[in-house]
Length: 487
Image (cartoon, rainbow, N blue to C red):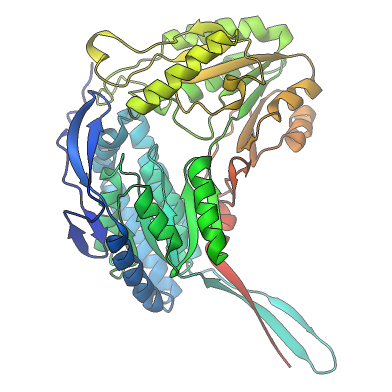
């Protein structure tokens, strides 16, 4: 055991409205539960419609000034924010553990990613430009386009990686000239408040970013506010549909990053050592399987199927579940009791549906029994049309399915309503590109290529939402294109 030695004290939580820090809100309070123990460890003030109104009004006033700030100054402030995030890496890692029990080994990596996302979009702040559209005709018509900010952006983020969501949304929005009101989940308020503090310390104008922990009521008030010009949401399809209904009343645009049921196609010519290790540990050895883009369906060619199952079973035995403050821990608990109940319910249904349990399947007992710790679980022979084959688990559960031909693999991979990510393991380059073209997903990663990199677009299709985060496309989500023409 190697404890980090970090302070486990919970910092007080506030509503961050510009430079103000409020200890109470009109939305009441929420009792934050430590997922390692199942015990209440903090009381979180919740924003209500009153605080949303105050924040959006302030953000709108800040936008009227921020849109005219010189691009070089926006760049400077965003680089300063990135430096501050990097300087506070240990504190962000600590707060990630406090938020949702993320193992410190994962938390450290996510902080580095947040720094990269912020610096990437800082670099774009002074490179925004339109283009000449035409110049012809006897009257000498000249036309061009302007890439302009929307105004106030509502950023509603989920609980599994608050700092990651913040860095994927706030820096590009600010670089484009918008201001942002963030509603983090009430389940994970700690990292978001530190982010707000650093925005202020970096020198952004008051109101450029506000952070309001709150429930669905606060989220609805934020989405429906007439001064909010666009919504960027990360979460689940049920909430996304409610957001879209609200946006439809005002014809308000939205960017939705939702769940996934990503397929990982392992062909018989793949490097099995690398393919099986990557596919197993990415799902079962990272943030307790609580990631939208994880390759949760492992499709394996029949000729190597049983060997793959044996390899996965051996790897699972080495995954260390335990205290997230321990540097030797691979994964900690899932987020709350509701997640435990949902995941165990899906595991039981998989048994009833005839899937073969290879590993895990239960809740950890002994010293960890009070927390929300689950065994890394593997099912083989999962029927593609079953609940486990179709519904996102968002927990440490891996499904394995056999296929015989390339065509069958593609058919199984495409048989869900999700379309976020997909993965291919093969040494045949032609096959890799041929299959990638036919997979219905926002991204296809081949032979362990990393997903969600800042320089390229990330986003899904179907039940996985629409819109992009990352790359120039992620910046474009926060810009309106205006055409200007004259003769």
